[in-house]
Length: 301
Image (cartoon, rainbow, N blue to C red):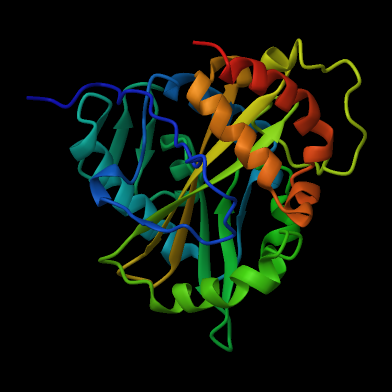
């Protein structure tokens, strides 16, 4: 029996109501669940095709030497997608058909990472060792950045990539470096990340954390005007090239869609965020009206 056309929507939920913890938060990843495709897929892929056609230089970059890794990712998707989603994808020799978009992708074509960007809703970043063995981002298709630009990160090592992240040097730099060095193809992992934004646009390359709050947003309308942006991030080592593939699946929910329990858990996270984290995430702009709304929502039966 064929698998269902789309998975049920299941956006990640990184909150448990406990104290804020600055950790990598890694969980094991079943390879069968590498890519998530739900009913939002057609709209997400339409936006990705629009960006790849009209703003390609902003959303796709491949440095010299990264081409074999890009081809390996496409080959992995060509194996995975028809097996996991046979109603949506079909492979015919060296070609892969996307039945949702109607596009056919040449697996030996000149733009393998661009094809990947048109096949899956995940953004995909590839880390490859530099001359001294340091992992460097050498290729990426990044259609849905959350307040960062691909041009600022491509060709840079992990400490430089994560330089603006609050508490990264103190809390995460050494664990991340150690983990990247020990990652194996047999043990992919996933983690969760979140932001609270006042703009639902998926393509957000411009940093706004230090700009003024929108004065029109209040506890009365925050349910409609503030958005919890959730990222399911996956990491896996490619068996052929040895590149590390970092995937980012973005979900977005207006605060009005949260249940009372979810509203209470998010409120705890907002109140417990350390000052450097709150500043980095721009919570001074969004947390006050959000908390006024969330406290009211969490008190509802």
